[in-house]
Length: 266
Ligand code: GAR
Image 1 (tube, rainbow, N blue to C red):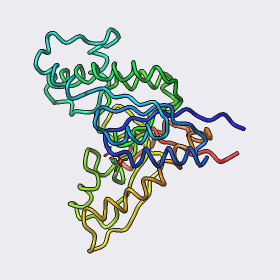
Image 2 (image 1 turned 45 degrees about the vertical axis):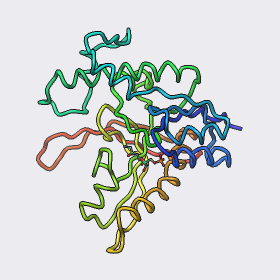
Image 3 (image 1 turned 60 degrees about the vertical axis):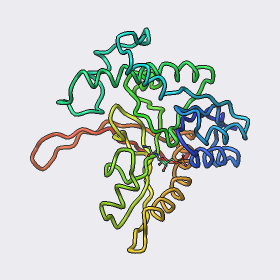
Image 4 (image 1 turned 90 degrees about the vertical axis):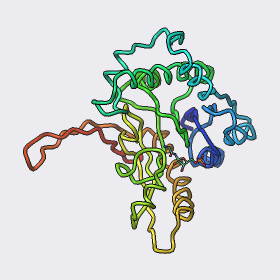
């Protein structure tokens, strides 16, 4: 029997994806075990779901950390291993002409919260971190500490749209308002940008004239609950390989992209 992978989850809300992953572990659709559920929000309903399954839970209260930082940025104590220049040179969350002071404030305040998250996560060794409705952007500070081997990313996210369309906080809303005739969801590895990392899997659904934002969300979530466990199981089977590709475009310029190759089952 192959060793189960240890999965940690971060959530912000109700946690229906978390539930689908826990259930898939319990029914052995995923060869894995959930080892913690963490949140940025003490009120997150998903924390209760974790507790019901005897999974350790914790939260880091982002709201109060960000509020304290805003009140007194000069007194803020940054993590010992935080390097502002390193983080500023790597992040792709803001356009390059964005005010540097604002970016700095964003990165520093988040890193304070992220260091606390890492501290708590360190109590529960894990192989894969899944973001299941975790509504906070992660900085390079956090990502580098989890992805200690950059060729083997191990933070996954589920996004409620067919990326690269509609990154951000309201994928189904954006899909609906744009008048799309197809919607969907995407599981991807996290990189330094917003919902821009290598895509692992996608599922799509038809949108017809009777659909509302509500029915679109229902159709999408139903697919999320299938897609996320499937992608996690591919990881558990060691079948996800990230590959750096270079393509020559019709204008002879080069385009580079890291993509995920799905290896055949052995
Ligand atoms: C899901 O639709 C997920 O795709 C989305 O939040 C919802 C969480 O629902 N995630 C994002 O938008 C991430 N940017 P859940 O708490 O019931 O799993």
